[in-house]
Figure 1 (cartoon, rainbow, N blue to C red):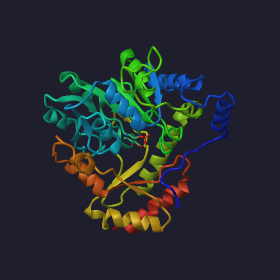
Figure 2 (cartoon, rainbow, N blue to C red):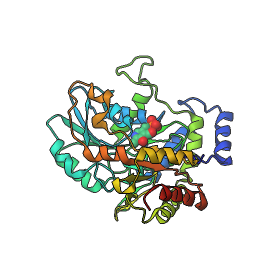
Figure 3 (cartoon, rainbow, N blue to C red):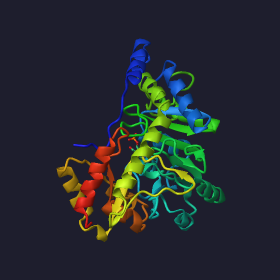
Figure 4 (spheres, rainbow, N blue to C red):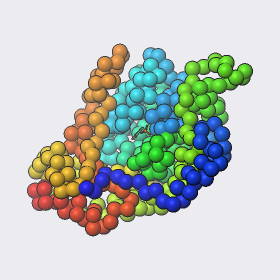
Length: 369
Ligand SMILES: Cc1ncc(COP(=O)(O)O)c(C=O)c1O
């Protein structure tokens, strides 16, 4: 089976983890690997502070807390995303408000934002979906006009750029995941980036049970969201490889573009002329001209030894969100269409041209042409 994704772990990651273990950097409270990883990744993105945590989900959770979002507030979120984006809002007792996708990049539709803002809207979490950046220049203008706090969900787009500027450096805070299938990984892990010292201090407090002075006296209800030293050691090595990984992802995407070209009823990933798409996953969307349904295609590809994943189920129809008091029924036809007809193909950086050609040929055989 060609898997959807397989991380590459080389001898230098292994050596770094062993070194952290030998130095006793096992917990999330001591040692140099955590601050070094935080600094290296923040530097890569051109942001001042990095706060390493246990996952992208916990990064989002405390970013929303640090933003001061709480009971009764509304937070705009991309409709098409991993549930973690909306859960960060729910777990802070606020209400996520889904913004439908736009049909080309599948990112949130910037034209819809203003119509969804109410006096309760406090923040917005744009998601850079599947590696394509949101137009952050335009989004920041809208956010400024309405005094919204911006938290970028950059879990899927490490190193992507918007008009030459690395994403994660636009919002008040940005959140990354280092889960095994992300562009760079620490197994599990996440990080919040910010230029704002107050946010950085608050985030450090929140991830560490809000310990203050005197010790064991807690003014705030914090969390243990600390990353371990040996994860940070792996992360530090991975940051050094990010440019190479992005180059390999782009190469993979160009090969898919070439071999999938001209198949009827197939929408391929789009890259805006102001963007670097880092192709976390290479997504495709079918329409009726393709000939068979997305689910049939998924099944047939699996029989041929090719693993795929469907696109995300949008936030407007998630039962766990719909049940919440105050959740607004918002129609998101584009996000629903890509959820029903979208899938992503094997996207490991070490796929060979033969494998990519094989995947594309299978898809071509199963379609009408
Ligand atoms: C857009 C998005 N946000 C948040 C997350 C959550 O990250 P994690 O799995 O590290 O908790 C993910 C993915 O896993 C994601 O794709």
